[in-house]
Length: 221
Picture: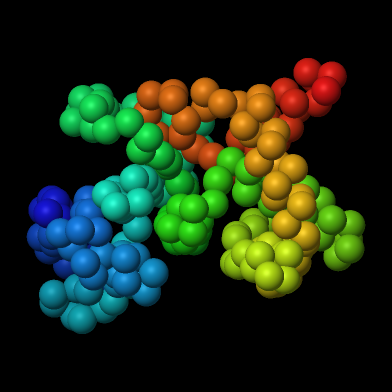
């Protein structure tokens, strides 16, 4: 069942303050439309009751996919490597194997959902993405601002990402062979087997991948 909280929001256009119900958590079994609401971002849309002004209202939201056994906690701009919610840890302590993640932006919550639904290891994916982003930076001669998984095709032996590069953050699609992901998966399984057993919601993104790669390199293997 979805959980909401009442919150006062001030309209940036007319400055009117109004009480709004903000959805802060939902699961895909009881709320079958929640996936669509995340992907079309309607869950983050807010409309002023006085002047009708509409805008994106970013707020923390917990997405719980019970069938695929994962939870993604969207906390805008979060940088911490993990967040421990004692209430949730107690509530889900007996459910082994649940992957719990925190993400800092809306594109990342969409990515995690798509990745876990496809049965992809997100740690291996982030290592792969890091390697591919270095290739993109060299090919474009620009810094890579962000990157997201777009597709995996076993028949074509490929995995694809959409990157945003340069000051204009233009879109750049890069595809690489699945062997790169499989090699990353081997690294995760061999050197980070206990990572998912850590308490709390883990921030598995670029920072984690960079740190994991350094640990792997320093192991001398």
